[in-house]
Length: 397
Image 1 (cartoon, rainbow, N blue to C red):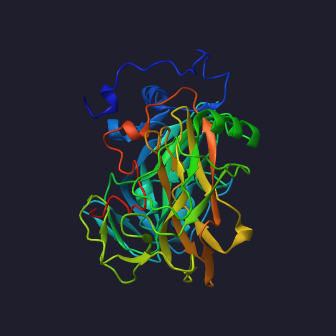
Image 2 (image 1 turned 90 degrees about the vertical axis):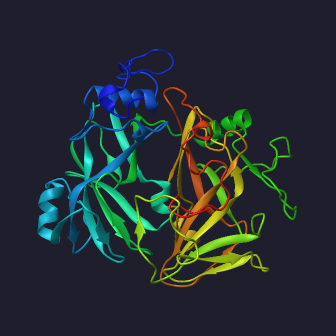
């Protein structure tokens, strides 16, 4: 199959399962078939052909363009300015990504996105860093012209896209075409309330908690006894500090003063120069160092049905001064075969804070698709299916 959108098969009409036009009818997230239709109808545009593998089951990978700016500070353009105009007033210098550009830790960059949008009024979009972006502590947020929010594309938006990027733990080498962010297209407001989420769990068994104190040699079968899930404005997830099999590893903590990470190279890096491995603490608690970055895993084993997508959000800023999960999208069918842990990207702020085993740290917000999508676990290129405590794809297993 050709990798270029120009050769994608004839688009199907944008519709939900009942055959109604996308301009009316049910709310929902667009799947890969609908995204292909958006591309064919020029609602998604690019100066170079989009590649087939940019289209995921319910999202579109965005590519970096050819250049960007180093900025004095982060910004939002607001209702009276374009991104370009605001960036030029805050730029320290402009640079090209061609040939590879080093993005240094602690600096703020604004990078061009190769894709632009001309959305119909019935559609909005939501952006999130890709999993591999969040797991290397690369802070990335989408910005639109005249926008007042990060990572939000309003209904009917027409214009360019930009990505604000700030490496926090590791410096990186970036080139045109690197995929740091993804876009999910939405019709209406398809999020589930508590009652509907309870019903979905009863039907599709969204989560399981492994028995405390049991030696876990594999993901527990779904026939095991279930505990009542914690549903409160979403499916609440907690942190596992017992240590996951086979080595009893509880967390990775990013080291300082490391080599660069080349964003285009998969499975190329040894873990040790970048990460410190932390075994399960006997006390069941981990003290987060100020401004340190951790990779942890959820206590829950999660399944996302192919009819739904999910997004991880922080549980509550009042429970502690730490940030959880920079890369928020969970694809339809994630963990559908045997279940998978949610990997948590955690950073403490300003002061040390104690994290306890089983402490609630985030929520999964579920949204229905207009039409079911192929399961994430069934895709040959899925990097994180069946994951436990997994680093980004840049590191050798």
